[in-house]
Length: 310
DNA sequence: CATGTTTCCTGACAGC
DNA sequence: TGCTGTCAGGAAACAT
Image 1 (spheres, rainbow, N blue to C red):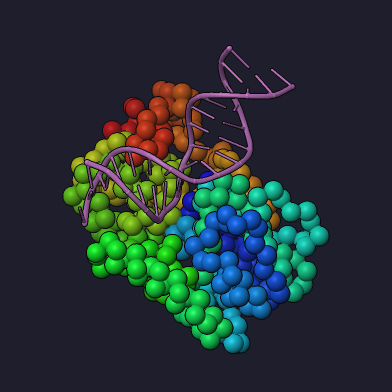
Image 2: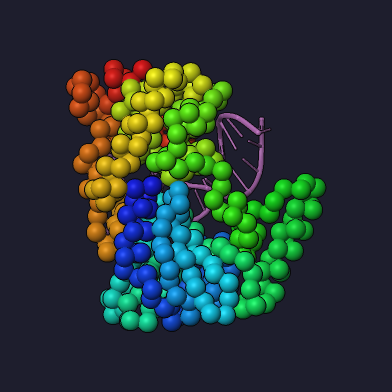
């Protein structure tokens, strides 16, 4: 399942292969595509655009798009659970569950494949002359919904044809690879929720999912069920260091392939063989030899060593 | 606001 | 063999 290291690997792979290429056609699969932005808008924005930098923000792949006749925009790809973003030969057969195919000028294709359809595709950027009233229409719809609820909340991303605010896209979460120790501790200050649930909360921290939360907690010697507020300062330091370490090692090994994760070339990662607790229930702890246990926290299976983690 | 629960979706796998 | 049930989980939506 794609978390920060996997998304980083995919984004880097796509960047290296298709940056500078022009999109000559955009195809979308059945009408239940996993999209936030209307398919017609996606198609109009993508067709004719030149792909710029492709990078990662949190668990989202961000692709810069440039066009002569429109303001710069970005396509956002969230891989969800089983999403794959593949650079393929145009002649290669299409995998089942292919939801988007972008044909490139050189004959290759950028494909989005997602069996479970938890992934999301959307366009981020200002409205331009090329889009007419498409965005405005969706916005008034969102406004009506807001009115009906009698609140002044911002329309959700699902309501919008085009996301038009940087805050809406980036969210409030911090990047775990660059956050300071002080800011890291402050994220969890006073929170009664289990530390594992807090680590998974994207509004606090970007890009940490079930695998790396469990692995970081093991390296820090902290049980996943501990109340976040009760994790000591020293443990917090070990947690941040352990998290950065595990994320960096995973990026170096191309991510973890525990189900069907593959990179832009369809290659599996190798970090799964380095997992110390994740999906090792009943197997001996690599440090003390006692069996790894599994509990459910925040609706997610959480793996830990009852002896090494307090 | 903080936190907990449900929902979406398909493939893999266990058990009969 | 082929069916049924269970599980996996990111994050939006909903409930408390």
